Length: 115
Length: 113
Image 1 (spheres, rainbow over the protein chains, first blue to last red):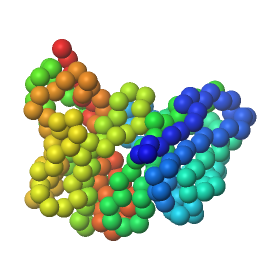
Image 2 (spheres, helix red, strand yellow; image 1 turned 90 degrees about the vertical axis):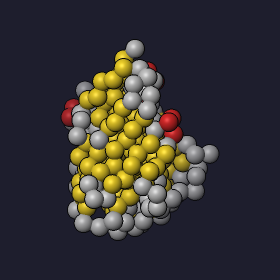
Image 3 (spheres, each protein chain N blue to C red; image 1 turned 30 degrees about the horizontal axis):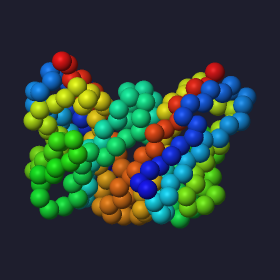
Image 4 (tube, chains in turn red, cyan; image 1 turned 180 degrees about the vertical axis):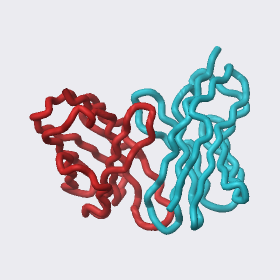
């Protein structure tokens, strides 16, 4: 199984809502990533988890809260978002996140719209 | 620090014509290089990668790329494109000292009949 799955595919939420994005992989990968991608732009790294511990936070606002319950799952909890947070949120995984080559496998993304 | 420049933001081409998407990078250490394709409303899919060895790298869907260290380039080529190749293409670099990848701004390839 070389697939990264993400749910939901689409999400519309108000600025006062609390919602969560979910990501799952069963490739035995020990690193998982959240990216944010605006239209016609490259993915921007948000968070990296390595061995279920947060290893990189790219100065992301606290209204985004990641969680890694186990090595196969990655969540992104959303609260009090702004309309400018509307974007495609991509999850990826790789065998490891340390120095050296680590091919990232991407999920299909969650299209988030904040009203 | 590392950076990636994709020299063309949009490349229109007719079906069955050859195409080249250009990518230049800068890094103070050795790098790994990647090309990803993103179809509308989908995630990124790895087309090919250069890690070491032969500078000509073949990938999926008939694409290939050549690593040129002296020119710090990693251009993507396909000898004959199809309508289905219409997509966004991202060049990315990851240096050998850290796992983070840096993406270029992307090139929109539009294949016209």
